[in-house]
Image (cartoon, rainbow, N blue to C red):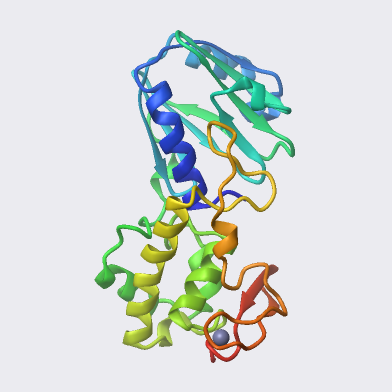
Length: 263
Ligand SMILES: [Zn+2]
């Protein structure tokens, strides 16, 4: 599933192409992509000008001259400016210059439109790249639960998913089951710093392409080559040489180094 670095990469490759363009017509080839209301959405989007495109958590937010269109890629969604790259088009946005195709093999992705920023985006937690150490630290202190599921909770911080939580916890030397409220000050500082480092490096690499992810031009990312724990069960830890383990935490496969990340 695309996480913050992948969605950020899509926005960075998409925005320069669509900013200032007008949606001449929106066609939903699958009603699912429009959350079951394709006609209503097509009507709302017709003739709207795209003022800006930005990321909030894992959402792509299109600020229009009237209302807001949001896209969540979920598992396999892509927003492509090159229709030739699309094999599973679910919606086509015909612009006054060019087009954008919403491609989605598994069809969990959603396009929505609302008069104002919808509640599911408005209530997201702070961004991991900009949350202050004080706010992040106070948030952890207040939550006596395992740190991994907490970091996956989009109301706590918005944009992290399974890959980047595992990578950040490994860099900070924190066990995925450590109780958030009991993590010491040094480790909290390390975790705060590791979020910026890992996400920054991943954005610079165009994200991680594990299965379907691609940017708006259909290009894969290469950060998966730099994963230190995710998907490396049984391989040597790059820090201590010990074997990376995989456990299940809150139904999510979790990769960590038992030597570097003690409970
Ligand atoms: Zn290690």
